[in-house]
Image (cartoon, rainbow, N blue to C red; front, top):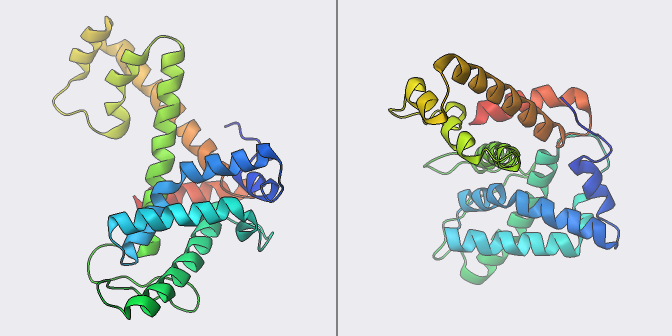
Length: 230
């Protein structure tokens, strides 16, 4: 696995507190990459989808305008946990505003404990758990997109489309013999191609996860956790 811990997302966050264009663009890209987990968390806190998206937009707008929201503590840790803490604080304030305006009418709110841990409602996952699940799915989506780009760069986009189901478990009724024929190869060569693709997939997932921790030794635990929450 190759990973540069001088350019991890933690570094982006710390640099983003400056006013230079590159730092602000880096944080903007980071926000765009992890929009889905934030929306999922806010929805699980009692807001409907449209309201959750509006609040997520507001959260990221404020974050881009005031990146110091993510620089309260320079302690080592997981970027996932740090971002979750920031959005919990944001949602807590949003809930207070909703209560002040509606006194609970029209929106079924979920309380946040003093420690910031969101409590589950009667249906589905707790907000924290849903955030982590969406985070894991986002990591995998980013890796699949990177793999697709790598295949496309060498003119083999159609190969990736045919091989991808053996990464995602969506093979359906397709057999390796049928796919081998479509690719103009044999089953043995196809098995080798799938093995190499899975190896590259694992490398990219490890690299992606490594970018979200401040210490390389934390990467295996973070990877195991994200796979477990899916």
